[in-house]
Image 1 (cartoon, rainbow, N blue to C red):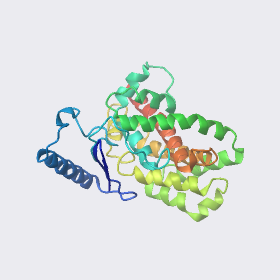
Image 2 (cartoon, rainbow, N blue to C red):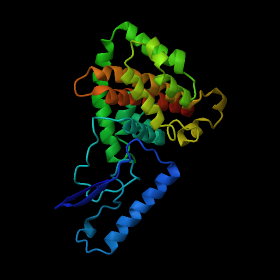
Image 3 (cartoon, rainbow, N blue to C red):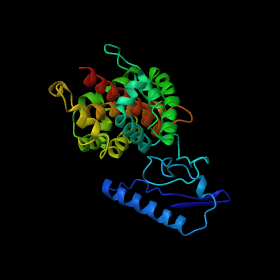
Length: 289
């Protein structure tokens, strides 16, 4: 935990690094954080109390797992442009607001399905998506054109290796098996054109979203399993996972050669661009079928 004590006031952030708490424990921690701070405010002369926004909790990353008492001050940025957790955060928000995103896209029945970049641009117009997540989305949108340019210059053997890795080895596999294969030394030798660090970044992205965006119980997936078209719908859990695997692996490889981007950010951006387009495309198919 780091504490910032400046003349503007006290700021607290908590980062557990790679430690992932169960969702119920996260909620308990969130509640305790809020309780401690609100009790402190209640027993302390706090001259700026009347200047608090309607909710003092909404501008912390993810909105729920912390608080930020000074929304006008810049939030401490994470190391590097993007991380696996940023990818999960973006996709969780995109998949939690599909109706609002489709509305922002102004699509009609029969229109072509949007690209991932178009989906993310539309997400910036959704009021219910918090400001921190929108900053992460803007970072993805800045990186995506660079990835596309770099990927267009990659040797054909590399592009075939990335696609073959997902289609031949990962597609449709359970998440745990996908992660294992991405880290398997023999598989990495078989797809030697794919950078090891890119495969590791893709594995980290899959691990980070296991309890949310890749969970069959996530609201997005439950919605698309309902309705009259249920039998015709592909399992969107596998679809999102596969889109992320190929997007993150290819994006990570391309990001490695782009100055100022790097493997991890390239993987996060490539994955988000691929899976955002897939997820909202699947929702549009369900909505208009």
